[in-house]
Image 1 (spheres, rainbow, N blue to C red):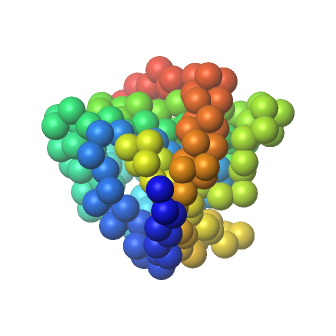
Image 2 (cartoon, rainbow, N blue to C red):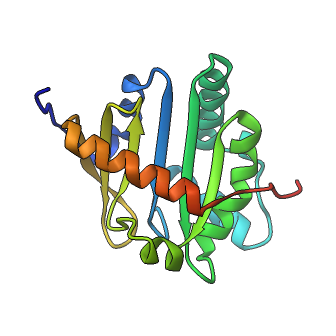
Image 3 (cartoon, one colour):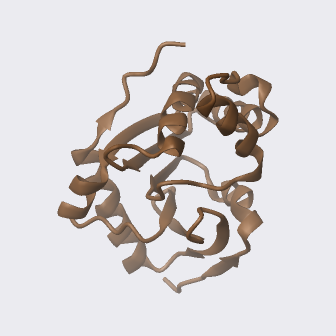
Length: 179
């Protein structure tokens, strides 16, 4: 099989879902993500005035998408690498994650120390779509998306399948947080 790589701009992450038929898995490695639609709700959470994700357009759209694809029988899973202690962003992300889980997404957590000790690559995030395509995502030092590359090279896909399995084996499902 010939590798067909596609370069993505920073704002192209939403387009990745066009590759998704059966399963999508993400390894999240960044301690913080600087996504425009999250900044106000993150600030409100950190000041003790959290917003329900349904009241945040960016998050409501994501949750609707997760509900839709999982109702169709497609899987969405991720392992989040978490610092010890977690960053403010990671605490907020875990709190918001309860709604992702209710929408049908499976989220697991793994400490950064364990991830490093088992040899997971932590320099970039990635999505694995249908065990056929890997979307490697790049971020700057503040967590702002810089773009990425979609790769179909079988050797690259096989390596990411192994990393996915390793991450799942060593992580734990979130039991949820009370609303």
